[in-house]
Image (cartoon, rainbow, N blue to C red; front, side):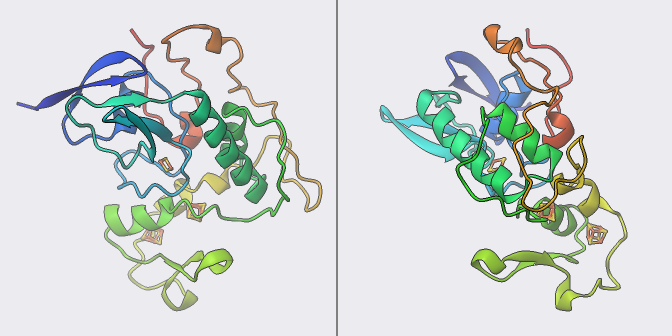
Length: 231
Ligand code: SF4
Ligand code: SF4
Ligand code: FES
């Protein structure tokens, strides 16, 4: 029988299946933590840092990514403190500055309260979330994609920059890429990027309802698998 552990997330007592992540547990129980690099069934690497939460250890809250944090007996998690909101908003600001031409990124930025960004727009074609690399390597076991380079040169590439024969042509790398969702008004021109803020997934009404999954449909971009309203 599946072993469960007792944890609290935002004061809600949850019996979570052992070995699951805090992020998966929160989503399962209707507590929406914004996330981007996480995708169900693909190993997490904590790349985007949007899913940060406070994990209270011996009375001290420690900020950590919830997708890479496994549940443990007695754990106390806070997903939406003032500190987390501020840190997450800053992460989202940087993300949308890097890649304003992604609807998934625009959506998550709005979800995190971003209305403007204090950073220069770069209009990158990749946010280095690693979804493509992980689905290729860990799910399909194809190892046809990988990260190369460091710092601003870091990017995703085929070995020797050429699609290898052992690519399985599954297209998962394309399907899971958050950059493949262009903003509704269409691609933003270089030098004319902005925070859209018009997305239907803005949660202004729903945020007045305590402890409720708002079924925000952000999962279209972020892989939230929740299908039912919170109890
Ligand atoms: S299409 Fe090829 S490169 Fe892309 S995930 Fe599948 S095996 Fe990997
Ligand atoms: S190509 Fe897409 S899926 Fe791959 S790391 Fe970049 S943003 Fe993520
Ligand atoms: S770091 Fe957890 S979803 Fe990206």
